[in-house]
Length: 169
Image (cartoon, rainbow, N blue to C red; front, side, top):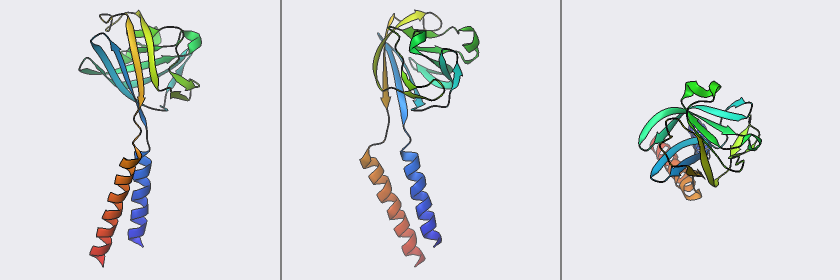
């Protein structure tokens, strides 16, 4: 009975972990690349014109640092801002990109879900990324595991359960 309970718990946990999706953000501008990963529906802090997530490990041209990522509502110019975490209240000194009120999420600022796709944005303020060119391509890709990976995980768990059961008999 204990083995069945253990196996059921292990299967439940493995499926719950595997079904978790993250979104990979890639911002490119010429030869410059900025990447970071966020949950598809992150825990956020709402602000008057959108929300932010902090701290986020951001890779800027191979150098990783913790940053605050702000996403803006379409009615407030849309776009995204990457800032030092202590700079949020005063507008920060980071990258703010925007073009045509692009909103990179659906839902509300309190409960957002990122929109996968490719967006073209323009830098409108300077900061540590001001050396980048003006135009950015933002790609948001979901990293959901494929069904064959889940099947492989499931057969592995079943194999472990069978081996433990045979050893106990």
